[in-house]
Image (cartoon, rainbow over all chains, first blue to last red; front, side, top):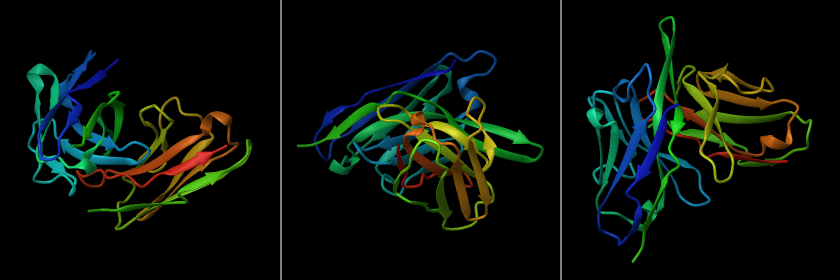
Length: 128
Length: 106
């Protein structure tokens, strides 16, 4: 069973930086490098917000408008790890940050994607 | 960006009721629409993928329908364990945004 564990959260002042990591384990017949990965955040008591995603080979990368230009996603398939570099943090970035594994299922020529595995999250608090 | 609008934002229903949650996309997304359930303190769990495909292990009282811009999640014979917040998600683009969520109270 695949397991995702986030780390790197904490209390940080506005304008400062933080780097989150997501360590993946438990792959059997597949590997971390087979999957696109994403970061999703959830402010306390609020809804889910997709933050960033990266394809298996890092060729496709996307960001939510709210973090574009400030956050950078990356991955190291050799280390089974996903990262999120967060710069110029704002109070509104306060949230639990989850990494999630993107699974693709194809039926004929039609392929569908969803997030099948999530980490337990790491809390980022941006406050002076 | 493709925006998703869920309605209602919350609802209260009784055990045995049928419940319907709507999700509307700002542009056509074919059937690239998923539904998740999240319970307090837990991570989301996928219920429906590709608009109408039931994820393995999910009770058959959950069903999804729709294509294009209008989608529906239906819960038949609502059970006490079905409380939580439900989110739709589009995967038409590599910016898989979520809807705002619908909180279901029993």
